[in-house]
Length: 399
Image (cartoon, rainbow, N blue to C red; front, side):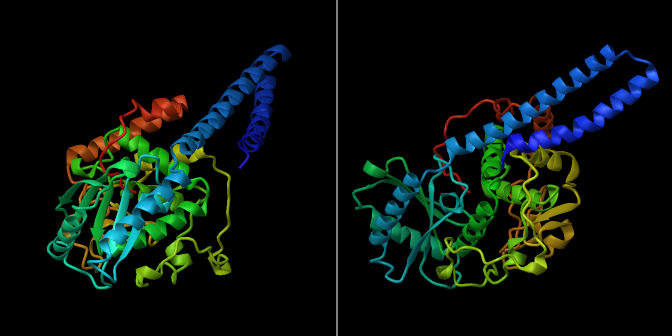
């Protein structure tokens, strides 16, 4: 997308309309040609300044993504570490598979993202409260004698994880290992294709995640967003909040690829898309710049999305009634999950934002959207928008 070309066309259209209106009004008020020229010159200057600000903001967003994006070298190191862990674990689980999930593979990773792994030992669901803990404990004992492992911590959660730290070559990578959480593999597969569908998706998601982190609303342990729920919010906005839409509904467009029933061992993030079905009527449009989309995202959730009545569903590609998603028939879904913010998880149909349950923090989140929109709309300054930089976190960063 050529930012300069787009903004020049937009400026020309706006100027033509305003220029005609100014001279029409000037004739009615009997203003001199000099006065009219002064008015027009001021208008040209103001429009040019706005265009420059928009272009600079888009470029800053693009540069921020370029500087923070996970490199191919970093991904290759994670692949090497995955292989070493697989060779260490496979003797006790000979038929297992070890899959990279989350931001390291789905296109939304940063230079600071840790490595999330899913150990698949069976195609059946297991009890995460009991079976998963037993399996992770076995892995933990096996890795105790591994010379590259420096520290292990078994974290008991809804989906238990074994957090592993290393010495030597991989000292800067932390691994979060779960067992048979197949939905994480499906999510990674779907998010990878959304992130690659349009070049604007990844920069926008990265800036939104960084903004949320620096404003203290990207921490599920403190009743705010997970990174995954923020990604779903961005995708939803790009599906039906942005005009024209930037993203289609991939689960509807390619039902066989993203049906939620395929064997996760067969999912491949490197397969290209088939041609878009003609019946879908989808057309790529690059009218909106990154700055347009970031402002639009904030405006959408600050003023347009009704958190009291609406729920997000990227599976259906639209806003839906909260009561509708709360009644989804799924073993993963319960009414008690649907608190302040409702974001349907596209495969389990549960609430991906169930961590936001504190009403006071929920009000702080809504205020952050409003205040940040007004700040960015006025200043068009990415650094001021992001706020005070934070130190890189040593905790695991999810997608």
